[in-house]
Length: 465
Image (cartoon, rainbow, N blue to C red; front, side, top):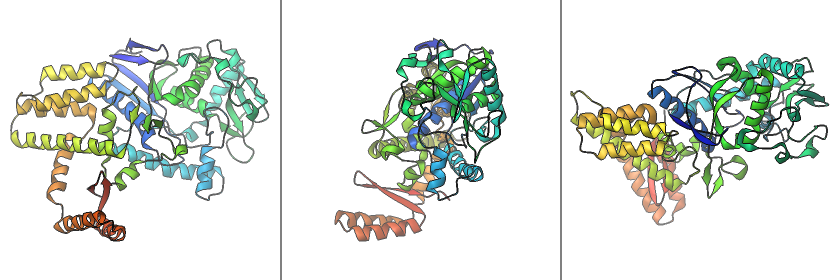
């Protein structure tokens, strides 16, 4: 297995801390809103890593945190608190109780997204609010070793005390000028909060009531469940310069040990060449996809088509193409199941080896998917085709076995009344009779279906019940 390590900026042989075992930590979401599909790509990446290691016979322990208490919008220490923004959006009083209540709502929505994308539930999903004591203990260690100082608003980490601060990605302290006017008490713009004071809300600590800093939360949770040194830590590439460098700084200065052996960072999902983000109006969620009639697994199939370190472009036309391609695979699997009914399935060792080689080359899912396509078009026996394809799906996670049957049911049971409504709506749209088109869409929705218009074609899908 070869991994591209962001720390060394080279592709390296993977050597686990303990033979046959892998410890993995993934930066999870701040649950202040629904998660958009750009961020979901990062969690999909973690899923592929876990599935691949398990496919290759490793014993994996995967941890993904849930940040359910206040931290700041920017990766530094500036901006408005995200959880506070959520409370204001919902017209709720700003209290710790309400913060945890709104966080639970969006955490449940996030877990539903993982389920719909067929992302395996991490073995541990700790909440930041339940690990305050671990954070306090870490800050105490840093204070005892002389890495902290106090300002009027909190306890800060002094980056000048760590000689190789910013070693992840080669970031230097001089490159981290930040917005010093936001906090003139900081010794250097790169210094970051370990504990923030709050007289109204928060938890008691040796330094005063308040909240842990964003960065310390991940170190506290990671160390509790995986130990002081872990094999792999992942996240989007936007977390690398600040959040992950700060995790390294506080963790290694507290323990005197290497925090993470291999850092893996995923690229962005782009629209029109720009990173998908809420701030730029790109708040496309799985719910948005389903409202437009797309299956979440079509998005998973789209994710698979690009290497995790490659930027990926998104458009509705691209997603439509992915869904059509996935449905073709489902039909092929369904046909193979019909031809092999009652027969013993086998795995083709040559194709399995090619599949493993793709995954062992830094999780090259695009190449692994190409192996699946070549397999399905090959002239090997149907028993080997199906058996090998279902084996591959342990990593790809496209639910080939289940969805090939479900797809058949949906195709065969489309009601005649629905077909007629779709035909009428198509004629109305062609005549630019938008009022009639909207009325017909409402009738279709009442029947339990959603309809979306993509490239002049109506895409219809049964709603989840």
